Length: 335
Image 1: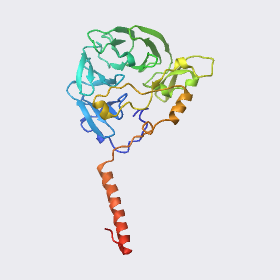
Image 2: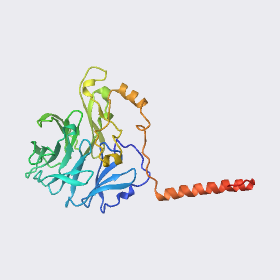
Image 3: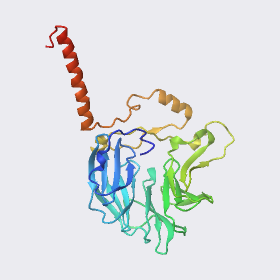
Image 4: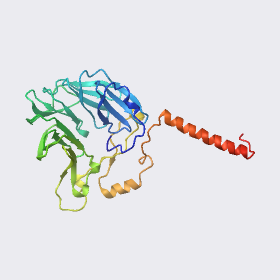
């Protein structure tokens, strides 16, 4: 379910009970352990504690049409959804209430995709004009009366998938059916700086973002996208040409690690923490890994089902009976 959670779940997540139709979207919380947001075909958003296998809350009445996307902000205080009704809703995640709404964010009828801009705190929406021209807009979630920036991209039919690198403030736009990937630099005072694009004759059916901790830092790789084609998955690597073979400190600030900042219960109780960061320098990473505490090395243990517990109890009772019989045969009391 994600690079952050490399684990094997041996029991079902209560079959995501409560979703009356198929689950269409999933997104893990960026800082809280074991918190998963899911979107069902009945247009409801549910938060789950997957360690306990239980539902935390549900946003069931805000959307009356298909939910097209869901994304978390940098700390996981809120999430945003796009909907077929052309509205973007910003939701307080703990209370499952809509805090703000961007009405008619894009006039086009096709799907709208979203991403938050990391520490900057803005929201990027990518959609279509009424004439089917692709565009993206930048919004301030605290004041959605008008967009901060609007950039028209081109005239094409493919839905664009946005990816934002919070460490470098780079926005990558990859379109379904496109062979190219555009990238821009964003800043806190809202200007957008086009940097260039990657071009290919092979169109993409989908795209996924590799976290920066998975990059080849000794090759000066600064970003990597995994491109799904009709017959393969291809890595698209973005590098900065450097002649030196040593680690380039200026290219790699500390990045988000796989260690959760707080538990699901702590987050639900009001804990507000940014992602736990890690060094990108391979030498420092090796030292940190060797000194990691047992808490940082903990692994996921799925909650056992009632049938598993009953089976273990039967085995334990059979063992107790066997030992009692052996004591009785030896003439010893079991009291």
